[in-house]
Length: 113
Length: 111
Image 1 (tube, chains in turn purple, brown):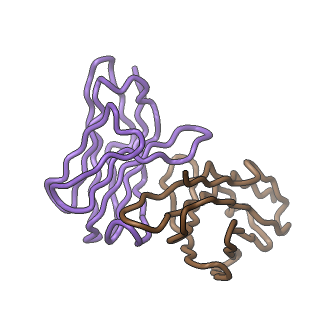
Image 2: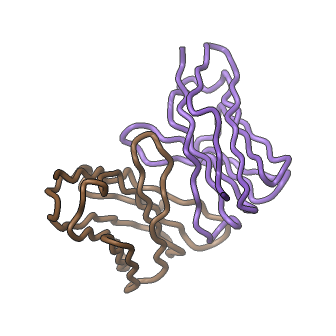
């Protein structure tokens, strides 16, 4: 089955710790995205990538970093500089950036210990 | 600045009671408007894309319509399994513009 997988489903972060969220897709999509979802708020864009080895900041990139070394993978690192990381993180992909529909993964819930 | 406002925030319906959800938007030239369904603790599931005013799309009990200022998601004779949060997003024309999401409408259908 083609789709987007995210792992882990739940992630716990200690103070001062960097954590990495995984996102993999086998849809052969060029573009990938990371969003953050907080209760009562719309999805907010963290980073997006149109092609391998290229990515751009979204609206709330501070405290986050990404890499795009392979077409299938777009991991997100939540650094210690992100002071309020507790949220539901969603990865999405589209055939290409700009027009095509975005399809979402199942999400990772990040909690702070 | 592109904006999306969804109303109502929450809607409670009896099974079989038809209704509509609203998505009002302001955007500098619409490239596309998207509807998603999201169940608690899960990722959004794609429902529809609408590109121009007057366009309509249907899927089972759902029908999405689009005007120059808003979109409606009509739910006909809803069932309890239609209970979810429905998200609306818009994309503006020009370059590589990102999606802008509304906060969603939380729908509860009671048997």
